[in-house]
Image (cartoon, rainbow over all chains, first blue to last red; front, side, top):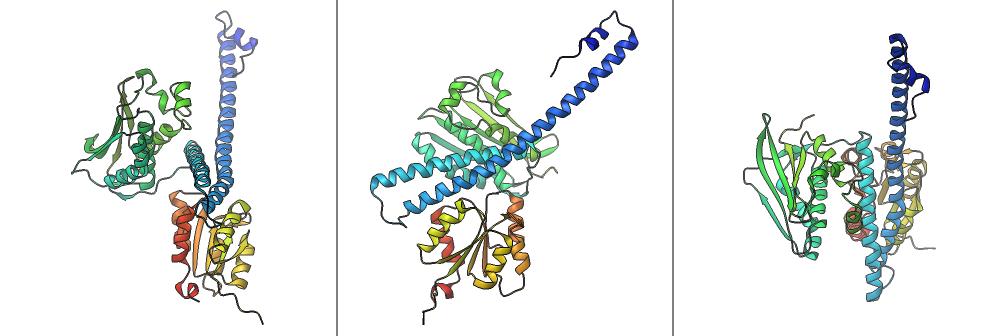
Length: 277
Length: 131
């Protein structure tokens, strides 16, 4: 924001007349409205830029990954063991980069209110199982103990299956990322009744490094990682929890955490059994 | 007199060589022929003249919505027996739109090569493969 003019500042001084002070206040108010409109315009441009650039980044990445997979499959001739290793590195790096670009695209669409959900009847346990399978190699690599517990009375929910998987994937990914080798990670789902409606409560917990109380709100803000060393040790865009919160809220649910530094984290979110339009 | 080429024909509709380049290699090296179109107009013409067995269709083309190709060819003999949407958008609305337009499958780029090869065997009609 630019500084107010000396004239308006002086006019706001108690020694100025009431009329002069009211006029100055009006000038300052109009100036503030103009600045807010300008900042909103810039924010929209930034969001659109993010959406465009992430979409455009996907295309050359697609070429890199597909060419590498053609080589890996031996379609252009057999490869040596070392060549296989090298190609595998290109593919896994490329796919990781693609995930991050996708995350930025989802964030940009959310920020521009362009995210929509297509609700259908979904069994939460099936989505948890899908996400577990996707992460089992990471869990095994870190020798983590992953426990899944879905209560027998958990009802089906009206939700967007793909976006529900996205929420769970982001939370489980963080839990795996921030838990040292040999630790525990869990997902639990139970039936809840809150504010006169039925919901399914999902908990994604870990025995990892934990989060200090004064960072509990910060971590849901875009691009936030609680400290620079964390962002160096743990890859990611810093958008996962922002996106998870937006997707939960799009379903009419809420998300929160309980955590203490050094004592693991428990993230909770609710999904109403009936979609809240 | 030259012998007619009976290998299945795949039409790839995408305006980016980053996409068409590797797909051409993949299909040609696995016993298919490939034609590439980079716009709605050229895709419609290719369908009319080449009669592809499979069309891989990008939904976003320089001259408009890629799904228009299906709309234009609807009810004609030039409509390929199988069309699969290859898209960079994985949102549910895009998927629903592609299916409603008549796409057999909707695949997010980059489709894993193993999946693409497996699917291709399902998409291309048996009579053509055995011809």
